[in-house]
Image (cartoon, rainbow, N blue to C red):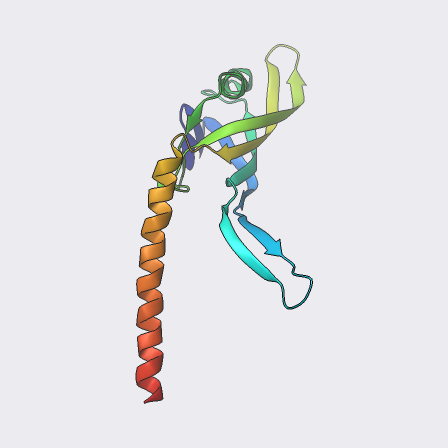
Length: 163
């Protein structure tokens, strides 16, 4: 198995093809404000970050264990109900928080008159879902403490090398 998102799995085998096609895009953006004084140099401030976004294409190909229409219905239900879950790829949880599917556009091709739809390509977009912002705040504080220890160690090393 390549990974999963709740009841949606990504896998490729002889009789099961539900795979991420090509690349997965993940965007992490800092929130920066810029202050421009009338005189003097400007200044920027880091004010946290935006919610992470992930997008990818998924191929649903008819096989013994895969009905593309059934798999597509799962994805549509996720959008309609607002299902959020952790995204797992190669046994690793992506990010610190779960994601929610915000859009799923589909392209249907290879229709067989007896077997129905044979291939559906779905463009899926997800956004990070942080239900409790205080948990995020605690995580950031922990990372700040870790970063300050690293910065202090680095500065101490520079001081030793200069003496």
